[in-house]
Length: 187
Image (cartoon, rainbow, N blue to C red; front, side):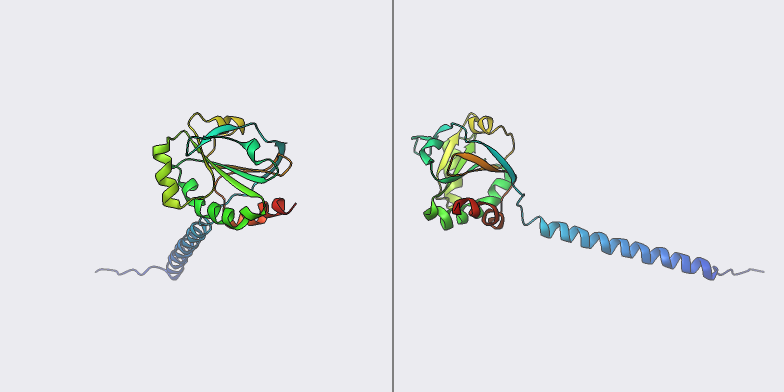
């Protein structure tokens, strides 16, 4: 004689609750991952408030002409250290270009300083992104040493008095440029 046993009602409900719990955990993880991915589209980091004198920095532009930060005294200058191989550098270029175009008539200058790459590498990048702000070449990491950083991208905002007031380590969005730099331009 064969006896057929049925699981107890308590065991059935216990397994059902475990199943529902696993589904809830899965849905929660899915939502968290989607939220994290959505917020990563805004690549901007919050700048650090700093206060130190602008370094003496002399490099060359894309035409091979000598250039200096001193040439821009009296302007608000955003110095952006970048490289063509750097994904966050690429991602921030459209925001930098738009902000530059919108504020250059107000005494704002954006200087993009490429780190350790040659003119032959940098020129196609500048053309691809349609960059109109000044681009300088720094094949020896002089700017990184002067600003005491090894991060790319790194950006520094120099006020009209020649003081570095903001420092970004990571990408910048146009929203954060407007939020933090526009006030310095209006000072």
